[in-house]
Image (cartoon, rainbow, N blue to C red; front, side, top):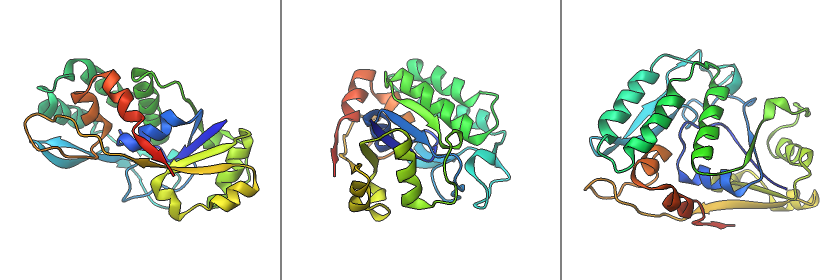
Amino acid sequence: MIVGIMQPYLFPYIGYWQLVSAVDVFVIYDDVNFIKQGYINKNYILINKEKKPFSLELLGASSNKHINTIQVGRNSHKIIKTIEQNYKKAQYFDNVFPLIEDILNQKEKNLAIFIAYSLEKISKYLDIDTKFVYSSSLKKNNDLKGEEKVIELCKQFKSTQYINAIGGQKLYSKEKFKEQNISLNFIDNQLVKYAQFDNDFIPYLSIIDILMFNDIDKIKEMLGVYKLL
């Protein structure tokens, strides 16, 4: 059993999706503290053909609160309009825009559930059959922190392999996982260029950008372009 564990991110970049597609179970880490300057509620798209941020409005967001206790605000319609204005001439707009509308128009206000819905919907669109589980739904020792908590989560699934994003190299030790009979690997994303209108390629944008300019078969190829370290 291969497990991945990450905080829920809003329309994350391709590396996040490579992790989702590489594991059997993806644990949505929803009962950890919100990161204000992170990618939980924001990302980047092309706006006037330049890399620009967009953010989902949140109510009562604080780094002292768990992600699953924060509420979504009321600016979804503005994000939808921005995406429509800037991608309506993209090759796969007609296929993708209804998906984005459905995600952003949902009535759910819990931030973790809101984003989990987006992960599940996009996974279905891309034929990714990974199972999603909320960390808050699992019985665990919440006094554990960091690496020890992740190892305990892996054990709940009798995991033999844990895959994490490349940034996890600073946080986790292969030796400590090996002691628990779990192999630890990190996804090293390999850049794949694609046409974005007539401008120079801008990498590492939201999955929205990739969906708008590439068909499903091409995106499936991209999902496999990485190295496990």
